Image (cartoon, rainbow, N blue to C red; front, side):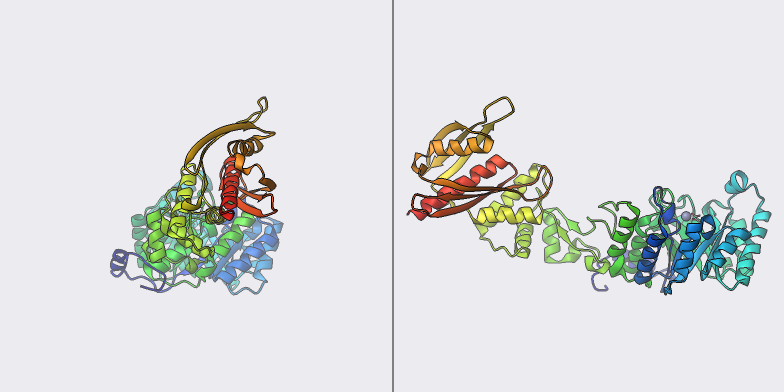
Length: 516
Ligand code: KIV
Ligand code: ZN
């Protein structure tokens, strides 16, 4: 198994019975079909930024746009064609003189000519006969070829086209000079087996490289693209983040990693740049990548369950089919109610925090308690919890222990707090009012502990660890005794009042420990 890849032998077993290509060309259509994503419209500068990134990524073809569609589009495609990129630059055109001329004038290396071939499209959209479609396709493939460019031909809605007609038109355009033929599943209605059958049939009559272009209407675009490769397709049309018309195109990152990890098929893509590319496209389109998106989603290498996290920490292949580094991602262990001690310990170690077994158990308990309340614990939260636990004296050295604290507050009542504490094992209860709930809670502690009457609260500091209304509150108090000695202590809780009470109690315990 290649390094960083832990996939199923069954897939390999089946693949060994196929005549798989060694390499597959990646034809990227982010700037063309991707721009047909509802709500997406690139400026020429944005197109150039993405084209440069795609070139760095190593795609073989960049479909830069449809030059006939607007002046801005013509300029953007021309600029990309002149940018000296290594990738082949392609423009889309209908088999219409104006379209093909606009593509040729933009100076691209390749013209992608398409026309619908299904009877459904012919009858309801083109109002043309099959014969007319065939003649038009041949005419403009020949015309473009005569101008010295590479020509790729697409039979739009191929997967709903009569097979005999499909074979006939592909054969005809190849005779007219097409260098590659593309098989679009325009409305995403084929299945992997259907695609395998179709490509196998076309392989028998077409002797130029075959490409596929799959849409994701049924969530099958990646599977269908890979099935086409199983049947011998040599090129796949894809878009970054699966952008494209309606539910989008096959996603570049899924297809490329599927080919590499599941089939051992090479592409020219530098896979370690996949996440960086996805993030750039996400930023420029404003189309957010779902966190659970394969390969590039935020959660693609995140582990939550204690069992999974433990496994991954022991050996990443247990719960990661590929190493995150292969695609430029990072592993994340998320802490919450399902977290185990191993994950907490590892996170703490990564943060440079060493803890005893008892402290680890207490920190894990607090993480789980917070998780039960629906909170996800970040690194910052964990550090604060750890600091608070590390700053707490061991139980045997504690004089005061908080058992309960309740506060009554609101715009029409005087804030009132009650506390129940154990002082050297003896229960004490008391209450107090204050200017606010925190003040009331601190006064209540003072009321039940006359022995700290000389202990002054010199400083009180409150921090929210992370943004959001569910952020953990970190309270730091500085207490001063009658001799000027200072006792600094922290409390970290999701509730500001409880964090304040905890900080006070921790400080009082430090005071007593210092007087022994
Ligand atoms: O989906 C489709 O059929 C297309 C063609 C232009 C290839 O995007
Ligand atoms: Zn499409």
